[in-house]
Image (tube, rainbow, N blue to C red; front, side):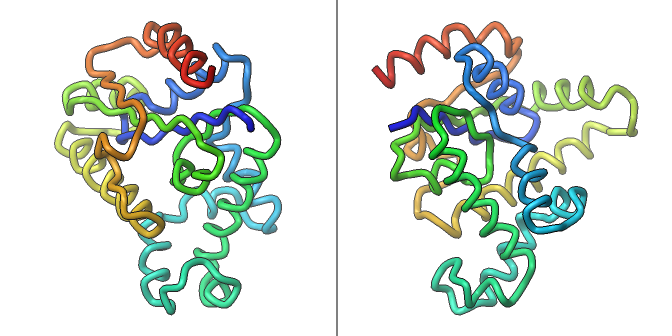
Amino acid sequence: MPRIITISREFSSGGRELGKRLADELGIPCYDRQIIDMVAEKQGLDKNYVANMSERDVKVFYNSTIGRGFTSYNFGINQSLQIANAEHNLIRELAEQGDCVIIGRAADVILKEYNPLNLFVYADIDSKIARCKERNQEKESLTDRKIKFMCRDIDKCRANYREMFTDSKWGHRESYHLCINTSGKEIKRLVPALASYVKNWFE
């Protein structure tokens, strides 16, 4: 059985950076935006279209179907669902290839049968605002109020998306094996200890 680590994260908590650095430390692949690129190529779609497809859109169309999950019948209804289905299939294919870190897209639920180590990354709002501004580097005018709204809105979409596939709640500690608070922390300094934890977990 491959060692699969999934990363669920609050917006601007540093979860993406943590996942990539952890994968580098462990010497295994990390899949994040690559999933979007691969799905776009397989579906013959523009990468930006796939990237900008909102998880909210998927839920809206999912709720309008017969509610039996992602069947071939349902996916004839809307392209948003087709893309989500393609993402799920690709995530399973990546897990079959061997050890890896997969960020987002409800991978912890999709890969349940692989017994992944499921991590949740979060931070306080002040740390999220600071991280978001640092990452933005003045490319866009972002006020504290706008960042707070983005955090609430994106996290709500992630929670709703997950709830389509499982009763376990997004962000609740009971849904994960380890929750990591990155508030006021430099991500790269957390990785060595986390890598050791991961190795011991799978041993």
